[in-house]
Length: 360
Image (cartoon, rainbow, N blue to C red):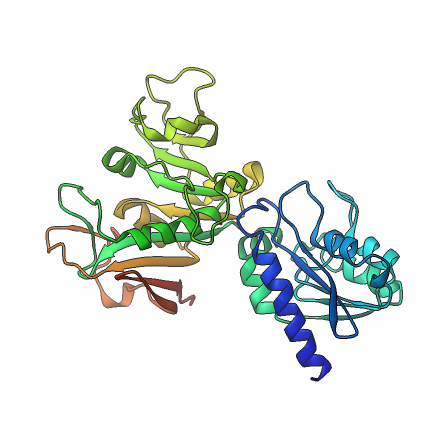
């Protein structure tokens, strides 16, 4: 096996390790590390939770003295700054590794490249970009916000074959099956915030939290996403299920009449773009999931704020009087908003269709 093929093989192992922390590390990125010597893994680790050691520290601890002369495979550039933990670049240097292979650099222009530079300055051989696409996909929101952009926005919709999300009365439980509803928990667990509108809250009384994960991850270890309700008229009911965890609830709009100081945080009404920036800057939010009715969903699309559209398509028909997926005031073919398919996956009897907008 060539060195190139070995690098891909071991980086894939590091990526699999990193994925073990994808639900629990928020707001930190998910990172994996593998130490290899003589073609054998001598140490491995992943970052499990903010405040706990980074992946490199776990791998070096497992390898011990064997780390000297080994190759380290890391899915994200080792940090070069003191935060809650010491710099991982220093730890690799002090351990005496001979080579460091990095999947992708940190996208923060203030720190990106510094870990690599420190390792290279110590005379250690490096390679960057192995399995980079997979590594970036694992931390897409983190890398996007670290680059100075808004959070990564996923818009989730459950619809019938004829593109309806509810009956005309608003009744919508349930269009998709239990498997699809469990699958949505994955995207909730990836998200720092879930945004919905007051119409959805009044119609469905949702909890919008993470309750179960298909891979068996203990939900007690998962930081619950901030639930954000857009409520322009202050209609949030005092008995809403969302208030079962008021600390993770944020209202945007008008304060409801029952509200007392300390009940729940209320921000004034603002544009969706400004809201995303505030969530990033004040709540360390890298990934946002929108679970909303056709008006708010359409507003996110019309504003060009959707990075990923997730459609759960059920093999059923709700009829022409049902509510559409999106309210979009388009009247001409030239106004159409085109998407490209990333994947189509059967989930029980339903299909999960993931798309990205075609940027022009």
